Amino acid sequence: MDLNNIWNSFLDRIKDQISDIAFETWFSETKLISLKNNTATVLVPYHIHKKNLSENYSDIIEEIFTDITGSNFKFNYVIEEEVDNNLNDNNQIIGVPNNETFETNLDPKYTFENFMIGPSNKFAATSALAVAEQPGKMYNPLFIYGSSGLGKTHLMYSIGNYIVKNSNKKVLYITCDNFVSDFVDICRKNTNSNNMDAIKQFKNKYRDIDVLIIDDIHNLVGAVSAQQEFFNTFNELYNNEKQIIISSDRSPDDIKKLEERLKTRFNWGLQVNILPPDFKLRMSILNKKIENNELMNVVPENVKEYIAGNCVGDVRKLEGSLNRVFAYATMMNGSEITLDLAIEALKDYFVKTVISKNKIDQVLQIVCDHYNLTQDELLSKKRNNDVVIPRMIAMYICRTYLDENLTKIGIAFGGKNHTTVMNAVNKIKKMILNDDILNNEIQKMINEIR
Image (cartoon, rainbow, N blue to C red; front, side, top):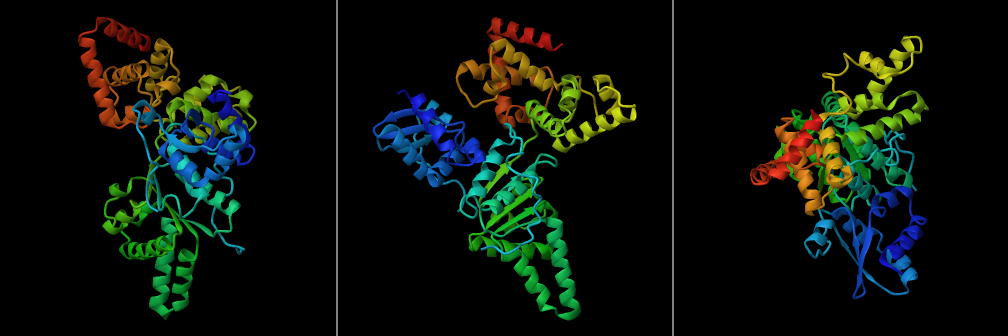
C-alpha cells in the first residue's frame, strides 16, 4: 500500500469520528509524505496545524494509524517551507499559554459552518477554531483585527457558539461600548448611593465567566477609567486561565492612546489579521447568499461578477448590493435581472464602476492562463520557479502597468507584505533587461489586458 492509499484510508476513518468542521479545518489539507524510522511525516498548511494536531488529536491519530498499518509510528508535522528547505521543526508552542442559564449575547446564526473561507481569512478561521476547541489553553488572548465588514464579529460569534454547544462553559459576548456603558453606570450608582451591590454585579458579569468575547476594543480609547477596569478584568480572567477574545479595526500596536500595559497584554497571545476577500471568495459569498434565498437561477453570472468586482473591501456591501438589485427589479414590475439593470440599480451605490472584475483579478487570470497554472497555485507558498516567476510577473504587471499600490497588491496575492511585492517587481525589472523573450511575453500579457 503506497503513502497516498494509507493516508486516504486514515482520512476516511478519522472523518467518521470527528465533526465535519474539525475534519475540514485540521485534516482535509494534510498529506502523508514519508514513513521512515518509525516516524510518519505529515505535510500540513500552517504552524497552527502542527500544534493542534500534536496536542489535541494525537491519541486518535495514533490509534487509527496503528490500526491501518499494524505498526506504531511517531508523528512529525511539517509545513511546505520546511519540506522545501529540509528543515526540522520541534513543534514548539506558538503564543502564550452543569452550566446554569446564562445570557451569552451570542447570535446563534453565525457559526464556523457558514463562515466562508478563502486565502484572506483562512489563518484567522483556523486559529479561531483552535481556540474554540481548547478555550484558555491554545492562544490567550486571541486578538482578531481587520477593517469593518470582513467577518470579525461572525468569527467571534462562531467561537462562542461552538464553545456553548460543546461544553458547559460560560461565554459572554459584549461590545466595547457596552462594557464602557456598564462601567459608567456602576460609577454613577456608586457616587449617588454608595451601591456596592452594583459593583459586585458588574464584577460577577465580567469575571465570573469562562470566555469573554469583546468586540471593537479600539473604542476603549479615551475612556481612561474604563481602561483601568478592563485591565483589572483582563488580569483576573487571564490569571484564572479563562479565554479572552478581542477584536479591533487595527492591530494592538496601532491603537493610539491605549495604555501600553493593555497593548502588552494584547500581544501575549496570538494576533490574526482578516484581509479583504479576493474575487473568488467574494463570488463564493454571493453564491451562498443567493442559494440561501432560493434565487440562484435568476441572477446571471455577469451580474454576480459585476457586484463582486465592485465590492472589494466590505463583505456586508455584497449582500446590500444584492438586495438593492432585487428591490430594483421588483419596483420595475418584476423585470428580469440583467447586467444593465444591475448597473442602473447600483450606479449611486458604488463609488466607482469596474467592468466585471477588478484589474488585479484580470492580471491573475491572464498570467495563470499563460503559464498553465491555477490561481490557487499562483497564490500559494510554493517556491519552485514554475510558480515563483509567474507570481512575480503578475505582481510586476500590477505595479508597473496598473499602477496599483504595493499594499493592495500584497493583499490580492494572499497577504504578502509590501516589501515582498517590491522585491518581486525589482527582480522582474532586472530580468527583462537581459531577457528579450521574457520581456516579449510580459508585453503580450499586458496587451491582453488592454
